[in-house]
Each structure stands twice: as C-alpha cells, then as structure tokens.
Length: 125
Image (cartoon, rainbow, N blue to C red; front, side, top):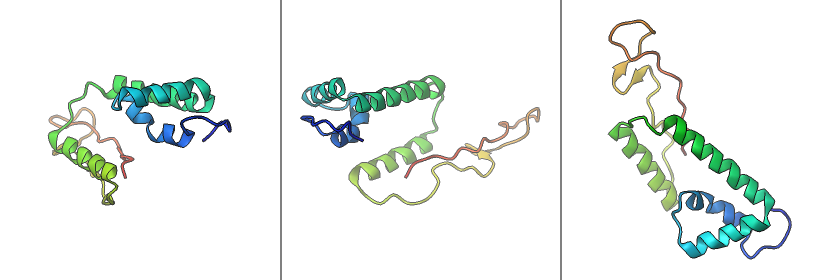
C-alpha cells in the first residue's frame, strides 16, 4: 500500500512495524518516524486506525478470559518461530474435536458439561 507520495519512511516499512507501534514495542525515535508518516499518509493512517480499532475490540471482548497455560505457551512458541523467520508447523493450536480444555463438550442444559464447543479456527501460521 502506498499513497504514491514520497516519504522519508516507506509505506511498506511503516506497515511492517505497525503492530510494534500499536503495542509501543519500539524505540521512541522509531515511533516518532512512524507518527510523522501517519501525519503525511492517509492510507497508512487509515490502516493504523483500523488495526487499532480491531485491537481494542479484541481486548474488550476477550481480554478478561483466563487462557490455559498450555495454550498460551503454544501460541507464544509460534509467535517466537514467526519472529525468528522459522517455518511454522502446519497444525492446529486449538483442539476443535469437541473437547474444551480437557472437558467433553455437551449440549446446553446437560449437567456437568462445558457447553457446546464453538468452531474456533485460529489464523496462526
């Protein structure tokens, strides 16, 4: 994506580091370069705003759920592989076979079950 105008920081570089910017995981000097780019480039600013809104929505909807330790470690392991540029195994992180964290899923109203398992399909590579 590019607005077609020349910038000190290229649009592709800005978008490559967008999540670092959103998560405030970059040095202040780099954050300032990206903020300056957003001031000059409306397509990148629009992408930033969209990603910021999605991040807030996910936090609001999912931020209070406890995550099982084994799931957290699997996801973090995949993130580490991706950051290192390694090949990520093509296997599901979540078990969607009718089990929810080791408990058999049941229909609503059944005693002792966790309720029906929703078909969660993670989009992790």
